[in-house]
Image (cartoon, rainbow, N blue to C red; front, side):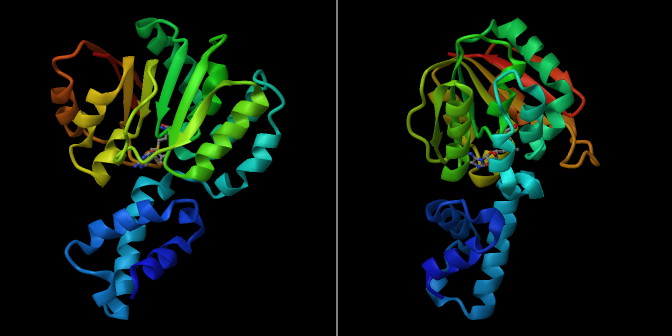
Length: 263
Ligand SMILES: C[S@@+](CC[C@H](N)C(=O)[O-])C[C@H]1O[C@@H](n2cnc3c(N)ncnc32)[C@H](O)[C@@H]1O
């Protein structure tokens, strides 16, 4: 089967439709390894499509709630930055932000007690986290947000325009990324495990390239849905990576945040 046709087949599922061909093609490449799509029998092509979808689900689709695709409707409910309930309805559309809802106030208080209140934030693999800006209580904040799918980055931009948030959003595959805007604080909430699943050892390179005074990287302490505890040993590699830097941790029930001094 032609590679392009196989990519289109993978993208037929609603949850992957917003991902671009280049990223889907890259994930298909990791499944195919040395094989060429054109040489596959139909049965093997279908199997490769299935395996690629499983990977895409792990790094993207698994976090989206069914109502995520009605996000426009929820955005229309936001009348101003003070409208906390409407912001919470949008945050609940993505599992990472939904799970953080009871903790946002405390988490930001504790993080900013270490970093000081930032004027500029860069949020990498942001999901719907920019909708938590009202919980930060920072006047005159500038916010840069990066997401994998163009439609997701555009959705955040639409919110910024509507709510009068200063900043911009951009589509970026962080495993291919070039330059980042400078920021006081860079958020990498629950994104490192995801990126490592795409490209092993990408984190060291990313951390070295960031131009931020502080980096706040978080990891899940429980599996999606909260059923299984993720052992702290799973994060030892990351602690070794940052051992020469100054850092503190902030913890809530489901998540641990490493607040790391930038270079
Ligand atoms: C577990 S979610 C975390 C979302 C958000 N940071 C939060 O904690 O609320 C992981 C996010 O990484 C994004 N992502 C996955 N692979 C990416 C890549 N290669 N480049 C940029 N973002 C990526 C996904 O789209 C998803 O929004």
